[in-house]
Amino acid sequence: HGDSAVSNNASLETIVQSFQDSMTLGKRHKFWETQPVGQYKDVGDASLTEGPIEPPTPLSEVKQEPYNLPSAYEWTTCDMDSSETCDEVYVLLKNNYVEDDENMFRFNYSKEFLRWALRVPGYYRSWHIGVRAKTSKKLVAFISGVPARIRVNEEVVKMAEINFLCVHKKLRSKRLAPVMIKEVTRRVHLENIWQAAYTAGVVLPTPITTCQYWHRSLNPKKLIDVGFSRLGARMTMSRTIKLYKLPDSPVTPGFRKMELRDVPAVTRLLRNYLSQFVVAPDFDENDVEHWLLPNENVVDSFLVESPGNHEITDFCSFYTLPSSILGNQNYSTLKAAYSYYNVSTKTPLTQLMNDVLIVAKQKDFDVFNALDVMHNESFLKELKFGPGDGQLHYYLYNYRIRNALKPSGLGLVLL
Ligand code: MYA
Image (spheres, protein in one colour):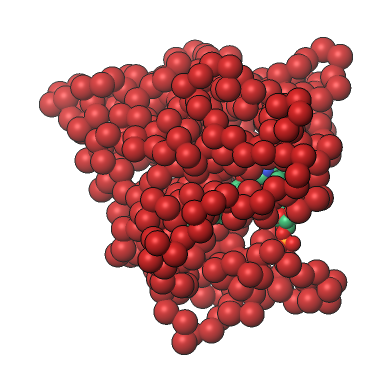
């Protein structure tokens, strides 16, 4: 593994700093301190080895009954095949899921997206967990897990990817989230899986790395009108529109949409590429077909096929995640594309990503977002991405990583 992926200093200092901050603020994590996750006090302790923090317990010792909820609420397993249930999850998230710091935007994952994200190869219905009010049956909270094989250095580990943790706005700060996390943990354990991966905008014990979002304006006028971005210093609207203008269609010869017949070649290309990162998914052809084959208004993938020998040399993809615009007279939705997995072996990555920006513009996206993971830093500035204010922290549950990671050591994108 390249040295560039491993740093013993930069992120370590950030973590030590946040530990010291939380100590002086007297901020404790009553729940997270009880969990098998990296604890702030362990940061930099060289005697701790890489791998599980605690060993699996015999399955017969895993608690058989669900955890107790406050008496007015009950557990429900959400069947995402049912369009009614899918709709309930969609509406809960649409109204109560993640907002930016200024409460101007809120993620609006589509129903089709939720189905794609949750019904993955080998998924467990029991990991799609809801909470209902007993009397009204209204869905008031949700958490989900999906199975994944994630490689950490040389080790491929079966994990749950945890996502879509959401508690209705009226039920916040009542310690419901820890109960939901314990319940999903229990149900993951029942499948003999003992590790998990997740991301969050909040700092918890302890990030494996902290990434930054970068944004590339495609429709600068709308982004400025809705307050997503601001007119730069000494810039006019017409100069700004000109700055972000893109060609009408991709320029790389052989650039085309991915098709089912490309799954084996894309799997080989991607596996080879991801092998250089410290943490990355271990994708097989089934996974690639699910996660990367184009799925309308959910995920888009393109590749470069050499005009001469029909070899697949490059690949790029993004997923569709709109946000509701809260309280704007003129616009209700921000159409955002999120960079997913990109591989370049022949076309320079910057050129490949410029082509994908062109496609996103053709498809009427307002903005293209990317994290500073993998090799993304190499094209962000040149392609006129600007740094966002949000940070995204990556976590592993019950797995310790020996060396601090930079975002560029991460080969994993969670939705
Ligand atoms: S990240 C997206 C999270 N969702 C949102 O941000 C949507 C809007 N917010 C909400 O719905 C609520 O504020 C939530 C918290 C539900 C987030 N991850 O019930 P509480 C801790 C982990 O009184 P509420 C995503 O989906 C907090 O530090 N923990 O708080 C990945 C405190 O613990 P401690 C979080 O605000 C989720 C406790 O909860 C998060 O009403 C990965 C307070 O509980 C967070 N995002 O509800 C989950 N936010 O006192 C972990 C707060 O110790 C999975 N908290 O500081 C772990 C692996 C499990 C599987 C393991 C298998 C082996």
